[in-house]
Length: 251
Image 1 (cartoon, rainbow, N blue to C red):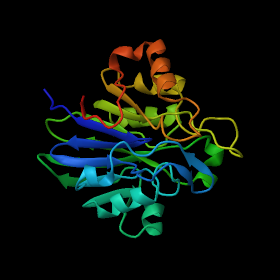
Image 2: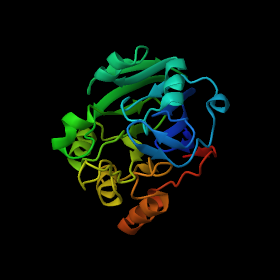
Image 3: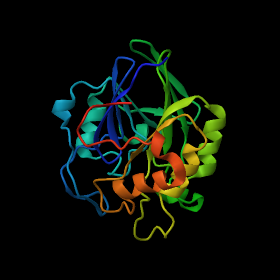
Image 4: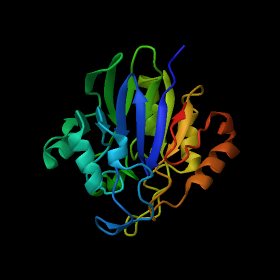
């Protein structure tokens, strides 16, 4: 029997999670709507402000260099957290963040010791990796709690398959979906679409699946309703949790 995890969707890939007594935030984004970074447009502000969130024990930053995964206000949240983990290159760019490479682990003390493992992620086609830069995902594991997978901006089913082989016990999968597409980056999705996400979810047949990174930005081509409906059409309806924005949800 595992304890329920509490999730609150802030928007985009940003989820506040209560896990093993810790407040954990994925890919912090708290800026208002508008143009950000190199031309990305944010369409909705955060459903929960950084002040309402309160102290953060752990920030999981899949990558620091795209504003839909770490914006200006989100960077402040990450740097105020007791511990903020990201890629090795990201830690060099943002002093105060702690770098990890796939396979690295960190133990964070909560109600139970939480082992954080960095895992691979492939942001779009492999050929674009030098352009899009390094990305990681994370596995969280604690005694008495479900094992959690936060995919980061991984679009590769094959990469997820290797993660599933190493971590077959995932019980809660937060999948960055949205089928993100950006001008001058081709037509292939840079994050999971519903078809690929369903194949990833099939690797953990007992896991609860939570679509994130499906709202709040103009370059998402499969918004929340499309993502959830796509997963349901592929037989995952009973396992999908459609998080409402700003509402604490036990899963």
